[in-house]
Amino acid sequence: MSLVETPELARRLARTIVSDVALYNSAKVKEGIEHDDIFEILKDELEEGRKLYLSRVDPSIADNHHFFEQAIVDVLVKQAGKIKSKIW
Image (cartoon, rainbow, N blue to C red; front, top):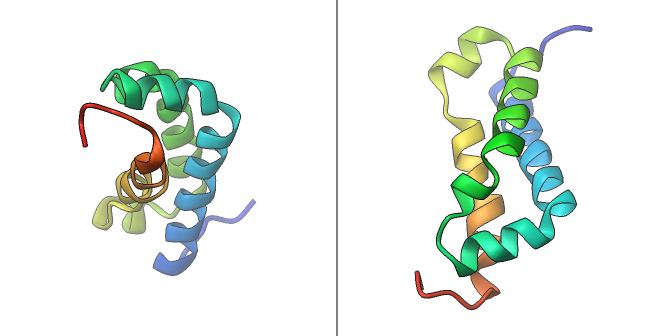
């Protein structure tokens, strides 16, 4: 399998992986947002996703961009904004 070698594809891959984490763990996302501990609750899932991302993306792109972390904010946190929480 060849590595992702363009920033745009790396960004899309990161968003896809984080979207899958959110989709398959929707109850954990809801609980984590409600209790302001989403990163602790999804620690294992996010780490697994990060490892997958890093295994598929050329290291020069992964080292120079923060696409996975941006995807966590854009996909996981921002989309959870409709969940009632004391953090917003």
